[in-house]
Length: 482
Image (cartoon, rainbow, N blue to C red; front, side, top):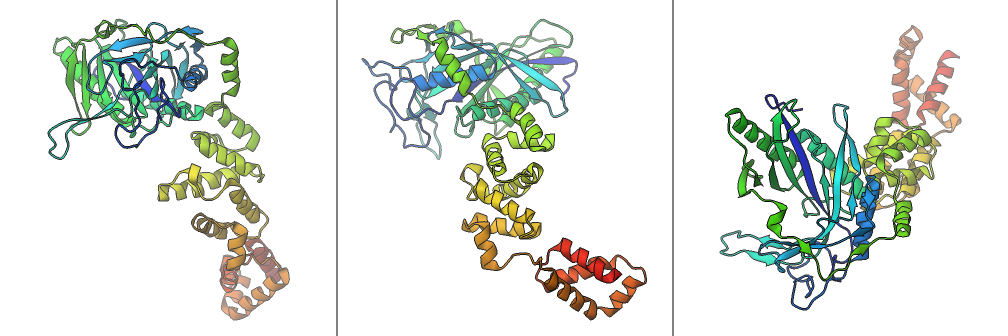
């Protein structure tokens, strides 16, 4: 953890999560990424005169899922407001958001720091709002900024923390945990490169031991979790330097320059009054019935910590492995489906975390599109367990499965990979090896017991690696001691 010369940072984060709804929050336009510019717009999201917003029920459901997952309070009555500011990619001149009456308040997110410390960050509020468009600033010598309004009206939830975070490292760990929760709930992809998860950070510093908060600044344009960590470290050091010289930190909004690794001034002091919030006249009060809240609560998935604990108890796997498996919901789902047809949890966990993740890393693949189904993996592991093939052969078969899409049985039969377990055949091979190696046999009988491995290796070589090792070992010892 970074130490800042007797000063303590106080950090609060505001995270915008783009919701995985099919349509936008106030209109029926598609809410997807990558379409040609301005091809997914209508009078509502373009803010044309006479158009009226209609609230997307699925967006509300996703917001409620998030609030319940962090233990917050879903407010039965909430409302929307107009947040007024001018920017070229905001066609209405205001953003429909929630202000004084958000859909949710309270709750907390707990996370474990790399050094083992357990931390918790309280949630101040979760509210719904619409996204703005996107400005495509001049590149390659162009003389003008282009505007893409496809993103206008895409539904967001903003998750605002209390100022409970005390270091850039904690900010990073909190964000990783938040992303995991959003993905487990299947309400946000968490893809920062596509802008599906965006973070603004509020930070101030104070002398250690003091309670009074310092003057805060807000850092924007943070495009990665590591970027958040670096930007906060830069801004904290900047504020500490000012205070040590006897100066005063000015409240301001800063933009993080990822290329230059510096934060530069965007605008000075800004408060909520500057946005001239007032109630959205075209949307009625949002009323959420208790029955619907309970219905959503019952539909929540098992969250990572609870799932890891169950894996340890149910499948008898190590805690570290359980935490790795449940870090990613699709990976945990894959593992559980393997266990529907296989009975050794630790073996399945080892295979998932080494062979499967290794292949995915090498191919830059995704478990959701992995060519080998959980049932195919379980079948392969059962063939190893039943001594049809060796573990070493299984790895080669598995790689072939990922390329061809064939089952283990098809590959084993086609390539003739079944282990030789017939004792009569193996005894004949052993006797040939001993006959061909009289010198080594004599050395073994005079006390050089390590040569047993040599004989096993020779048998494996003669059988193209197909001899079942345990049977070979047992028969060799029996013959040599007879």
